[in-house]
Image (cartoon, helix red, strand yellow):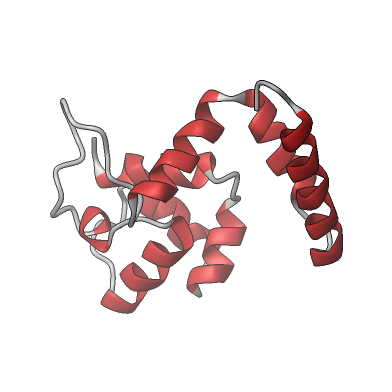
Length: 127
């Protein structure tokens, strides 16, 4: 898979717009669009570092130095726990719905929801 495709797919996977990525990295939307289309394939190091953090991708992938194609699962994540959580979100639409519902809530609301789910899990014989 080409770097341009990895960038676009990862941005979409995270539910981010071109503008959100651009603002986080400190570039224009057009620049991010050109990265994703392959029109710009040479990035400054500071942009690679920022994009790596925003998309939670190994910088080597962004630099095209890690084999992300063919018969191997791309290593988008810095640790196995994050990769496992992302895979669970990808596989389970109910978990994605919970994440979508959590976005934009206050820290207090998230804490309350976490406590409620923890209690519910404790009373669930299957959980």
